[in-house]
Image 1 (cartoon, rainbow, N blue to C red):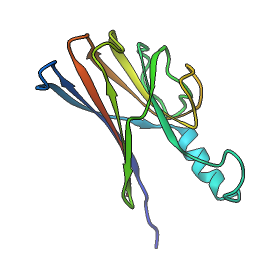
Image 2 (image 1 turned 45 degrees about the vertical axis):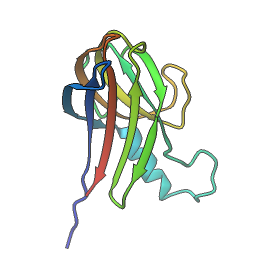
Image 3 (image 1 turned 60 degrees about the horizontal axis):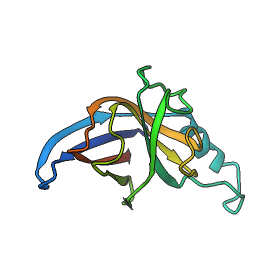
Image 4 (image 1 turned 60 degrees about the vertical axis):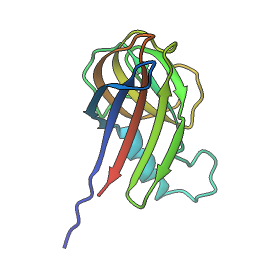
Length: 153
């Protein structure tokens, strides 16, 4: 008897104008990176009290790179903006984190998005666990709520 486990992720972009009305909504499937899978496998070989043995999702980054997302990615192609996650929640098989991008932040054409663990606001720092390609024209008149969902089945 064998069981198959799948790990899927998605990014939901919701745009709101200055009056709070939703003016944009689009969902993108992501690529879960080998960095994520390697860290999960390493958990099986380490004790839980070993330093650095965590997968604490801390930041979402946005960039302008156009290379297709790959499991081998370790960073965004051209990261421009990074911000700490606004909220996080989880159930037994689903992890959700949200990031609010204000009108005065990240005003460029967003072409890539990635989720990082164990990091800070330093560009290209931390472990990239998810990346996808997008096309979002971000302007100061719109704020975005980005929801990253990781589901294990």
